Image (cartoon, rainbow, N blue to C red; front, side, top):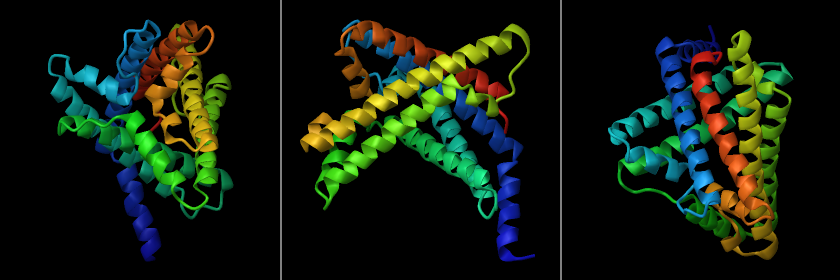
Length: 269
C-alpha cells in the first residue's frame, strides 16, 4: 500500500466517524440557532431598534440566555467539528479523476473555512474578546487596497463574494439543497423544502449585498465603504421600501435557521 493510499484510507475512516458525524450535526444545529437570531436581529434593524445583525450579534444574544456560555461552548465545538468534517470530505475528493468530484471538494473546503470562521467568532466571545464584522471588513479592505493592484484585487474579492451570494440564490431557487439532505415524505418534506428555498434566497441576497459594498469600496478607494454582513443588511434598510425588504430578509434568515435545524437531523453524512 502506498503512503498516499494509506493516508486516504485514514482520512476516509475519520470522515466516516460516527462521533465526528454527530458533532457535525451539532454544528448544523448551532448554525440554525445563529441564523434564527440573525433573522430576529435583522427585523429589529428594520424597525430602527439598532444592534448588530451579523454572527457576532447573534452569538451575543445567545450569551444573555440562561446557560448562554454553555450554549456558546457547544456551538463552538459543533461548528469546529462541522468544519473538520467538511475539510475531510474535501480531502476525500483529492486524486479523483471526476471533474464533478473536484467541484464538490472545492465547495466542501469553502464551507469548511466558513464554519471555521464562525467557530472563531464563537471563541472570541468565550475569551471575552468579541470581533466586529464591519471593523474587520474595513481593516481587511484597507490592507488589500494598500497592496500593488489592490483596487483590482478588492473588486475581484467583491465579485467573488457576490458570486457566492448568487450561488446561494441559485441553490435555493433550483432546490439544489436536496442533494444535501434526505427529505421526509408528506407535509414535513414540503415544509423543509419551502424553508430551504426561502432561507437560501434570503441569505444569498445578504451576501450579494456584501459583495456589492466591497466593489463600491474598491471603486471609491475607501475602506469605509466596505462592511461586514451587518453593514450589508443595514445597507438594504436604506433602499426604497428598505424596511419591507429587510423584514423579508429577516424572515428568510429565520427560515434558513429552521431549515438548518432540520438539516441537523436530515443531512446526508
